Image 1 (cartoon, helix red, strand yellow):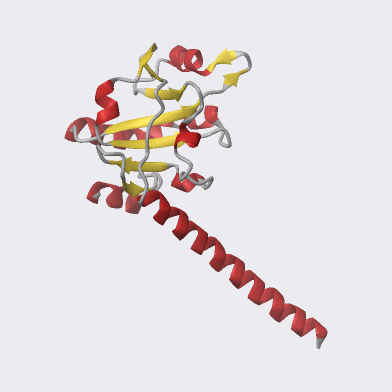
Image 2: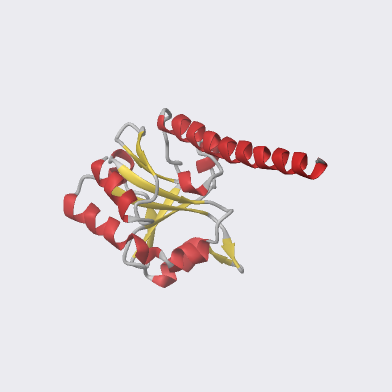
Length: 177
């Protein structure tokens, strides 16, 4: 009898925890959608091996921000940057939004991230949060990495949250936004 009672309690605990995670995700998403996202003042742009400050035209344009924080493997994300090829092509074709791959500034075995990116001569602009203040400027951005990619309008309000490179369904949602 005790064993059955224990199994029932365990079953209901699992259901509650799963429901709590979904509820937390919904609450985080709702809070993010009702906020304003701002970019740090000091952001470096690395494009085709050259390093320069983020252009003002990018700051004022609608943009898809893909934020890679310190909890992720930066070199892994850089190595798989090609998964954003389609998004960059759509951005270039339509000209109605910019793509901002914003990386947390880290040191890679004594090599500054900006230099590492410059040496790779990536054919897309990649941005580095020089002072690592993006999260402190935007405390509404949750720890959940699924919510670190968002399309924001000219006023900084999120229009769509989610990474369009993860699936065709997410790309469709992104394109409708």
